[in-house]
View 1 (cartoon, rainbow, N blue to C red):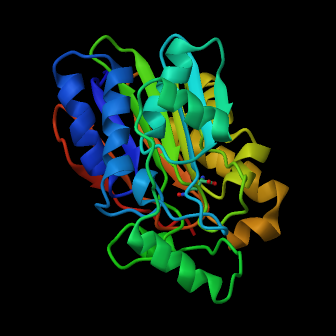
View 2 (view 1 turned 135 degrees about the vertical axis):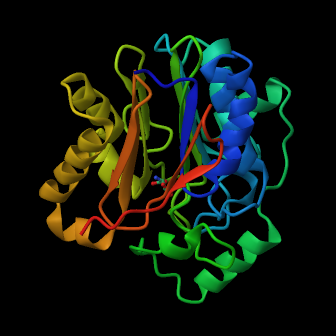
Length: 303
Ligand code: SD4
């Protein structure tokens, strides 16, 4: 039996994002509008995260650079990467989708476009993120450590794996998704992760379902992760099994790397069934539907 409207999001702060998205979904609104409204919550607020939007951690040169994409039920998509000084990349991604002939804008071009569209240009580095960066500069060692999500999305935790990926199905049964992040903390300036790459950090196919990812983006890009998850669901796999197979591909391709890092996938199918799988334990996600608006599925232990 189908279960929609529904919205699901990565990590604990997905609960608050889902609640915002739900305001649109419960009124019979479009999944795309729900996604944009929901993703703006962690982009704006330092509720529990250090790697999305204005509260994001900077790159190794001290710039907060944002990656984001959005995709709707018609296969339309938009994306911004390495964009600075604009607090809501998900909205800019949507503007790229709806107001330009392009899919992706990067760097200064993305900021310029956002300003032309009326978005406010502002300094994004928060005192908290600046302090974390200065602390990091003492050693300046770049290594995406594993298992830190056990504390990362809670106050006082470390900031590395906190991207929000969201997937929603509206009352009409249409699917949309979004993904937004400041990316891996202390990355090289100009580095782009999986999150703004259609097919890697996010993919939606209205016939089948949607998928999104979080974790070390390089491994997701290499395996075109979210597209893979959706195609596996097309072949009949459940959302969790599809995520599991995609994770296993990553492990198989680079077993030594996989031991050191986290990658998690979250997926939903056309019926509103959902599931997730990650290399390491600790990957939580939030679910919101007519039955319950604040369900948190805690990170499972996969080994
Ligand atoms: C990236 N996938 O930039 C993002 C980081 C992330 O939770 O997911 N953090 O590679």
